[in-house]
Length: 360
Ligand SMILES: Cc1cc2nc3c(=O)[nH]c(=O)nc-3n(C[C@H](O)[C@H](O)[C@H](O)COP(=O)(O)OP(=O)(O)OC[C@H]3O[C@@H](n4cnc5c(N)ncnc54)[C@H](O)[C@@H]3O)c2cc1C
Image (cartoon, rainbow, N blue to C red; front, top):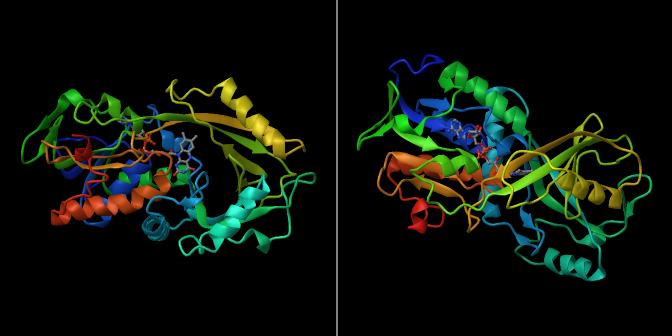
C-alpha cells in the first residue's frame, strides 16, 4: 500500500489520473483494485458534469423504444462495480428503481405493448396492460403507462466524496490544476513536475479541449441543467417518473428534475431559459405547490458519434484517455474501465468502436 501524500515529492506511481469526475473515479478505483498505485490530480473549481448529474441508468432509449447501446453488458457490470465499492466503503451508493413512463397517445401505448412481447426487450419493460393507474400528485392521475425495469441511480456526489477520501487515505491525491506544459513523456514513463509514473490517464470531461494530446477528438459537448424541488404532495417514493424529462425522489420530500440540452453556450452557469423550460414541464403534470431548492448546470462530455473514447494515444502509448461518457456515464464507466485495465494488464487491443484511433 502506498503512503498517503498531498504533494508529489519525487514520488513514483503506476498511474497519474487527471480529473476526478465519474470517469476519473471509476478508472482510479478499477486500477487500485487491480493492484496499481495511483496519483489523482483534480481541480475542484473547474467544470464537473458529474457534480450535477442525476446519476440515472436506464437500459431503454425512449425515443426509439429500443435497448440502449450494450445495455445487456453495461448494466450487470455497473451493478457489480458499485456494489463492490459499497462494501469497501461500507455505505450505500446505488438504488435500483423502475422508471414510470406515461403515454400521451394510444399509438404509443400500442407500440409498447408490441415491444414488451419482443424477445429483445421482454425483460426490460412491462406490458402497459399490467397496470391500472398511477397517482403522481392528488390531481394528476396517470391512466396509461408502462414501467422500465433494471433502472436505478447512483448517488454521484456521495460516490465522488467517498472515492476522494479513499484515494487520499490510501494513495496520492492532489487538489490542483494539471499543468500540461510540465508533462514530459518518454517511451517508458511520464514525468510530471518532480514525480514520475508509468502511465497517465486523462479524464477531464469536456475540458479535454485544453489537452493538446487529445483535443483532436471530435467532441460535441451538451450543456444540461437540473432543478431540485421540494414538495410534500408528489407521490413518488422510489420510482423515477419520465415524460420527456425526469422527476426522481431523493428523500426528505426532495425531487431532482431534469434535464435540458444546449449545444452552444458551454459553461456551468444556470440560465433562466432552462429554469423556465423545466418549470413548464413540471407544471404540466404537477398542480400542487412546490418550492425550488437549487438549480444546477454542467456540460456533458459527448462525442460526435455518441460513443466513449477509451484507450491510448496513437503515438504516445503510455498516455490514455477515458472520456466521452456523454449522457450515460454511470452505466458506461464501470464496463469500459474494466476493459481499459484488462487491455493494460494483458496488452489487449481496445475495441475500435471506442478507441481514440477511430478518428484518425
Ligand atoms: C444536467 C445533467 C444531467 C445528467 N444526468 C446524468 C444521468 O442521470 N446519468 C448519467 O449517467 N449521466 C448523466 N449526465 C452525464 C454525466 O454527468 C457525465 O457523462 C459525466 O459526469 C462525465 O464525467 P467525467 O468524469 O468524464 O467528467 P466531469 O464530471 O466533467 O469531470 C471532469 C473532472 O476533471 C477535472 N479537471 C478538468 N481539467 C482538469 C485539469 N487540467 N486539472 C485538474 N483537474 C481537471 C474537473 O475539475 C472535473 O472534476 C448528466 C449531465 C448533466 C449535465
